[in-house]
Image (cartoon, rainbow, N blue to C red):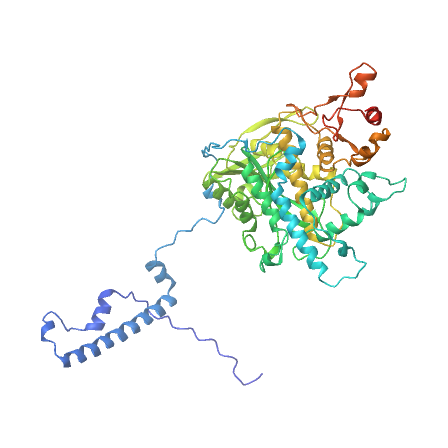
Length: 586
């Protein structure tokens, strides 16, 4: 056994006595028994000043020493801290159940505007089209396109390049270009040049009659919407900015929507390289350019914004979705609208902010948001059950049908309304869910109409594809306005498109040489007669047909025609079959 002693037991620390320091102890330590009762300010001399300053310094140092000693004592004695410090009240956490209630009286906001169209075009499809595609807008496109063509021509192209044959485009030719562009959506061919083929498998003569293939390709190559003087370094969308701004400004000035609005995103397909290309997994086109759209429930686009990613300084960063909503709703706040959105945008904070601006908000809600009431998130529901909580006039709830769905609203209370399914069965749903399903499909309806007659083509230039997409949005908006405000029977989109395209692509008149007698042979060659379509219309918008001059004279019967001779003085109405015969007889 070793003689060396083992390790010593650790020494127990002596506990210092705990003293409670009072104000009188501090005063006695600082001042002692001296008293300043007899001190007079006027008796103080310069020497007294120095002594007084030195005395004050000593007092301050003593106070600091006592304060440090007091702090050391408090650290050693938790019981002293409990005695001296008042107990703090625990603040409720954000979204804690204590701040939510089971009932609340929601705010009532009246809709102060009226659904109204401020335009007054003629009740014809082409008039509504021209109302949205103004000549000033088309003239701007012609100006930028001609400038781009001259710029390309200065780059030293070869003599065989198409650009060497460039002639400035004007508004009538641009309308023909747009007519051909829209008509390509009527029937799809795999390649652009197939529309000009003369093979019997592809022969579509109207394209070659209206514009040559090379001219169409050349305009498409030079199509531009900005100039070098308009380049903005911090705006990645400057090439398309004028088109987007025109759309939003036109819709804002010519139309005011009804109470219900919906906000959602749409995608323009793009798989090429682009700094702000987005990926949205739930969309039909998962890769492309994201558009945030404010629409009516029937699909009418009121305003849209192209998302430029992190370079979109107005809405990028924290609170991105909320910034997008407030920017798109900028002109519609304080009017009592009901806005429907999905869970990408909705939050408790946004609902309060919109309510403060006299705008209702309803839609689905993500369950992982910090502001959500915890008991609603954690509650396990059976099919058909619902739980609701209220806070600051905001209603958040969860309802289970096939799966749990969280929702938020500032308009609807905890009530259920009957809803019929596709089989005619009546089921009750929370009012928020039922109204959301009714009014939230605006962007989806718009995408569906665009998919019927797509005009976009694969191109190397993203801004051309986005511009053509915007043209289609304007086209469909004009169609919806025609059906709503023309006073005529509603047309299908197919019939409306063909009616507009038929006017954008004027029929080429064919000169007819009219042989006559020897005395008039020279005159007939110098003045060829032309058959053309009557353009005058009656009050109902129909063509004013004329009675065929030949049928009424030779066959003794009335036959109306939409054609007449434009060269003759009285412009007689004639059938196609009677045109040559009539001019041979005069």
